[in-house]
Length: 185
Image 1 (cartoon, rainbow, N blue to C red):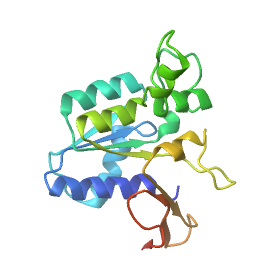
Image 2: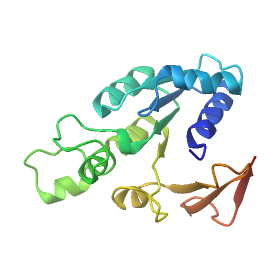
Image 3: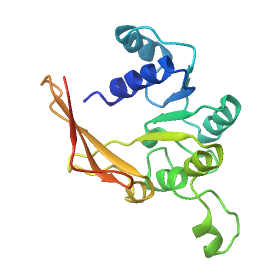
Image 4: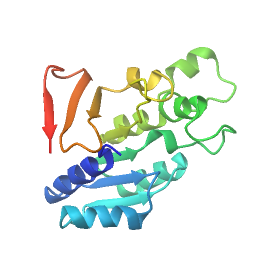
């Protein structure tokens, strides 16, 4: 309720204006819900594809077919691998979606060397991937800490849902400063 999806949809709109092929994957909202928000933000160009899906295998196929430059996953807690018995959002599902691909009966070193499905796609296909993760009431990303360790940047979007201002701050940034904040109204 803080506005993560709205901010990312607005970012998608800006990218589409620059002819940047973008795939926005929503695991929480329907296309109709996203469309209502998009209508409030203004005109979108054709370089934005929307996908309402939680099955990571389907998402991976779509990314490989569409060949986007940017992918937004909103949110990682809703994604699942169909070959795992655990529920979406569980520690094992998040770890599987972001940490390791299945390696069968491989050795521990093979598992360790396996990259995440999303990281593998990002590196192999040269795609920037934004992964949204929910924060618990205690202020930490829900699920395993492995998510925070694997990504290049961790941003917190904070504020009171009834106040008009939101803060965007970096708590991790491999390629830049964490001493800056963005204030949004």
